[in-house]
Image (cartoon, rainbow, N blue to C red; front, side):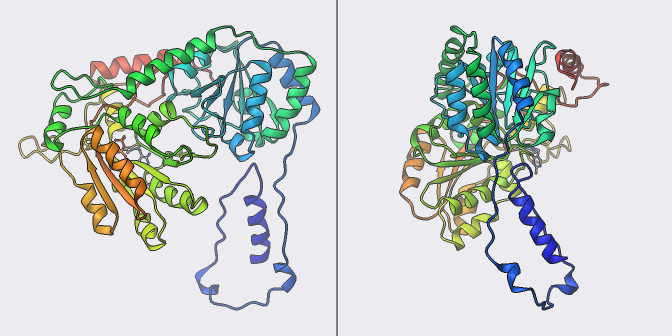
Amino acid sequence: MLMTALINAMRVLTDPAQTGAVAVCMPQDVQGEAWDFPAEFFAKRVHRITRPVAVDEEIADGAALLRKAKFPLVIVGGGVRYSEAGKEVEKFCDAFGIPMAETQAGKSSVLSSHPLNLGGIGATGNLAANRIAAKADCIVGIGTRFSDFTTASKWLYGGAKVKIATINVSAFHAEKLDAVRMVGDAKATLQKLSKELEKKKYRAAYTKEIESAKAAWNKEMIRLANVRYSGKTFTPEVASRDPRTVDEFVRLAGGGICQTAAVAALRSILPADAIVTGASGSLPGDLQRMWTTDVRDSYHMEYGYSCMGYEIAAALGAKMACPEREVYALVGDGSYLMLHSEMITALQENLKITIVLFDNAGFGCINNLQMEQGVGSLATEFRKRNARTGKLDGALMRIDYAQSAAGYGFTTYSAKTLEEFEVALRDALRQKNSVLIDAKTLPKTMTHGYESWWHVGNAEVTKSKKGRDSYKSKLAHLKEARKY
Ligand SMILES: Cc1ncc(C[n+]2csc(CCOP(=O)(O)OP(=O)(O)O)c2C)c(N)n1
């Protein structure tokens, strides 16, 4: 059984559609037994990772759909990365004048500086990508699972007239949104589709739309990079908030870094080929919108499940894969508290990782969601239990995360201003030891909005007016969204 299972494990691991992971499980009582495996079982094997190409009929269907499209948009998913098809996607978009937008898994498989690259799309997408998506008459999803975030819960390109085409090595994902499907490897299938469209001399009809959408977003990026706390009159990016929190945080921490400015500083200070990892909280949204890179495979975001606690383990994995590159785990205080045990492994193995911990004293993105849906702030800020109310609405907690990491043996920095943060980042680059930067980050200063939506299950019956309004807004969005 074990031999058959091991052969199957390799089949799944090397299948471009299934990709793994695999667990081979053995009952405890047999684990110490010896077995005479035939020697030939261990002979060297070559496991080919193949590039299946969509059949002619599917290519013809896809080409016919695209030929009728005036304003198509390519969505670059993780399949582009698995297939190493970034250059092919760029060539395809150049050849036919089609803009592209990135999913979390697709980012860093195409160059951010490419004139047709609009950047991150969807619920956590930016203004340029979301605006072009809202006007597109045809979406070409390449290697994307069309997750809830990528489609903004099927709302972003929800118009009934919007046609969807897909290239995906997995038939399951290729069928999503009832698409005209081309089942095959991204690189090989794109080459075949290109030939078909070249024959027909296809060209999208964009004139100035792409440029002007990108210009609007670039302007916004500059504003985001320059947000600073300005005292009592400061208005943070996120409007729904406990009015006490920001000033209380500043008093407690002796300052406060605005998150969007920190992300911009990271981009300008980190080496071009540095790898950033992330998974959950408000950072993936900020990064999907604001992170740019021209080095392929330098952005690693777990957004299948957005699993808190993945970030630091991921950084260690990335460092093992690319020991010559600097690797950064970008993590919220909530996520750090949930899981950071691989810090010890990094020290054991003498593998340098840099953890940038954004301490905003709470589960920031969930607090935003609660307050926007009319729930109110409920146990998502790190506040002490209040003896008077009996609730977790007492004073904000001050936690010295630098000290916790120093206890393990990390080299640490605490930063409560952008200047201190930048000094710490530069100094961290010179270290051989693993580093943690405890960045005291102002709550509510993450990116927000950008003409998108997310289908959150909010209460149908509630006493809160905000809650009722939010439920009504949800129904209105669902009316506009694709049904399947
Ligand atoms: C394992 C796991 N549990 C719960 C969640 C739901 N969740 C998403 S983000 C978040 C809070 C994250 O807080 P923090 O890491 O401090 O980041 P912030 O939002 O403050 O930037 C929670 C509870 C999740 N994604 N993963």
